[in-house]
Image (cartoon, rainbow, N blue to C red; front, side, top):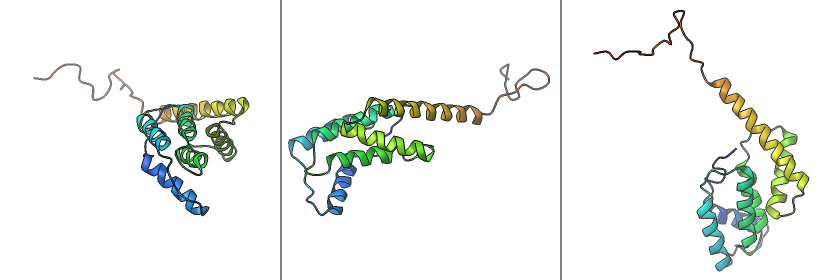
Length: 157
């Protein structure tokens, strides 16, 4: 299920997210110089691409590992990926599993079982979305003479 999961999250938005997390906990917001520049460059080169959910999560994990901020690096990127999936049509139990798995994956502590669960749910969501698309497409039917209404077989002069 490739899509632009992270496309709406500019680097400025990531910094604002970190700053809000810092303010909420009454700790100093600060970027970490070269590490922040490396993370920003990596983010800006990749976040607009159409990615699978796993690829988007790995991008958040990679940027978390750069440690671009003084505080709350993990929380910042977990917040971003969790917001990115908020529009998925998930049942509450699956949504909780996905949020937990994504958080663990960004932090780099996900078990293989969590990754398998996430992949299973991603496949199920993709199958439901494909089925909904097929159901929503109007079928082109032929009339009683075997012709498709509105189809021109010959050029008119």
